[in-house]
Image 1: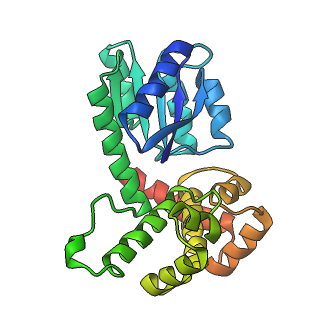
Image 2: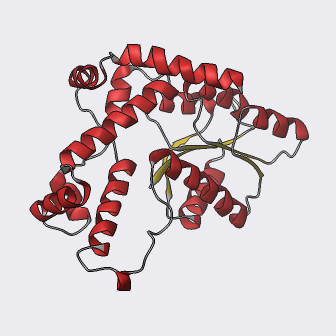
Image 3: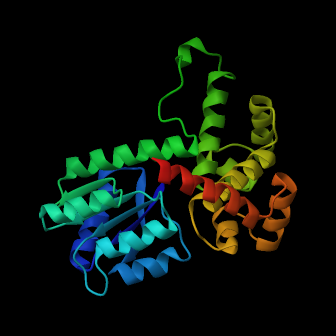
Length: 263
C-alpha cells in the first residue's frame, strides 16, 4: 500500500478526497493530511509519503509555493495538483515543477484512477516490484514450484512496501499464513539467501536511495529505511559501502543533481 499525503484547506473536501482515493484504488492510502503548505512541510520533515496530492489555493501557503519547496527536499516525489481554478498559468507552473498531473475539481473518479494507476506503475518500477503476473500458468507448474515462486514474490513485495515497518520473520510469516521456520527454509531454497539478509539488503538500498534523492537528516534516513538505531545504521552503512552516509550523499546526490542539470 503506497502512502499519500493529502493537502487541502477545506475539511469537507479533504474528507471527500480521502474517501475517493480509498474507493478508487487498493494500492494507495491517505496516511497524512494537512490543511496548508506550512503544515505539509512540517509533516514532510519527519515522514516520507510515496505521493503528494495538493490543492493550489490555500491559506498560509499555497500549493505551488509548497511544491517548489518540496522539490528542494524531495526532487523525485510524485505530486498531483488539484484545483478549482482552470487558468493556464497555474497549469504551466505546475508542469514546471514536474507534477504528475493537474486535475480540476470536481475530480472525475476515472481520471483519478488513471492517474493513480500510472503513478503506481512508476513506483513499482522504482522499487523493483513486478506489476504483471509471472509467465506460465499454475497448471504448467508443480505445486512446490509455481506456488512457491509466487509466495516468495509476494513476500519480497511486502518487504519493499513496508521497508520501515515490522519485518521480523514471524510477522511476515503471519501475513502469508505460513509457519516462520517453513517460510525461512522456502525463502532460502527459492532465492539462495536468508530472509534476514534480503531484508537487510532491501533496507540498505532504500537508505541509499533516500541519501541520493532527498535532503533528509541522517537519523530520518535511518528510520525511514527501517533502521532503529541511527548509530548502528551509520556503522553498518560504512561497513557495507566503504563510505559514511554523508560521503555517499555527497558523491551520489551531487551526481544525480548533475545529471538533472544536463537533461
